[in-house]
Length: 125
Image (cartoon, rainbow, N blue to C red; front, side, top):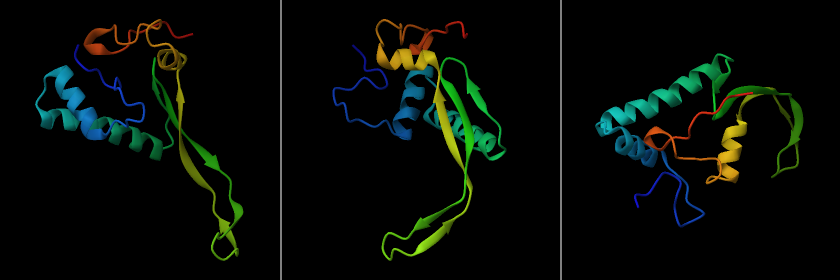
C-alpha cells in the first residue's frame, strides 16, 4: 500500500515543507518546481492575509486569524529585572469540527476517501 501523508510508523514524525511539496508532486503529478510554487503561494497568501488582519477560512479544515496580546510587565530570566513587553498580534489557528473528527477517528470520519486522498467535504453547520 502506498504511504499517505501523515501515515508513518513513527508517532514522532514531523512533516516538513519539503515533504509537503513531495506529496503535492505525487498527488497532482505536477513538476517539483510547480508543486513548490503551489505550497509557497498558499503559505504566502495566509501570511499576507494575517498581516492585513484578515481571517482565512478553509471549510472542512479550519480558520487562521490573529489575536491581540496585551502588553505586560515581564522579567528577564537571567537578571530578574522587570521588562515591559509591548502588545502584539499572534497568529491563531482554529481547527474545524471535521478536522477534529478526522484526527480523532480517521477511519469512521472517512479521511482520505475523497479525490486525491483529501477528506471528503461535509455540510458545514
